[in-house]
Length: 115
Image (cartoon, rainbow, N blue to C red; front, side, top):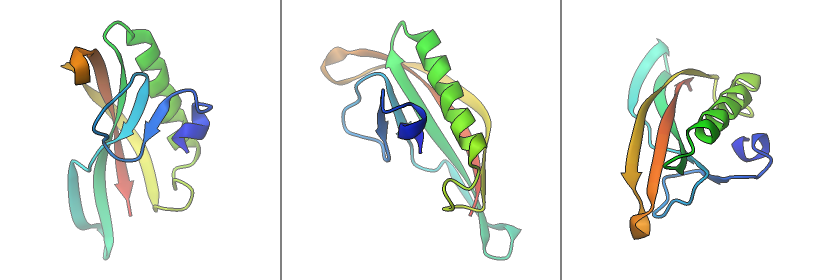
């Protein structure tokens, strides 16, 4: 879904990869899982999606984050895989050093998911 929203112009990783190349979108591992909070057998999950770019690509990263947010808001069931998902905000702008010493910047788009 995110690959389609970005017109396949960036790497979209379904799980955190060993090596990142900018620009990329990475579905991270869940931050928290609360069992049966919405209703019996309905779990609530906080799932960060990292948007990664080069160290000086703040605008491109922000634009990609907005694109991902809009794609999720357009289909809150994530193609029928969850009851509802919605972006609640973004957090953790970070500078990191990647493989080979490449300097990266990323931010996490935070999703709350009922499943």
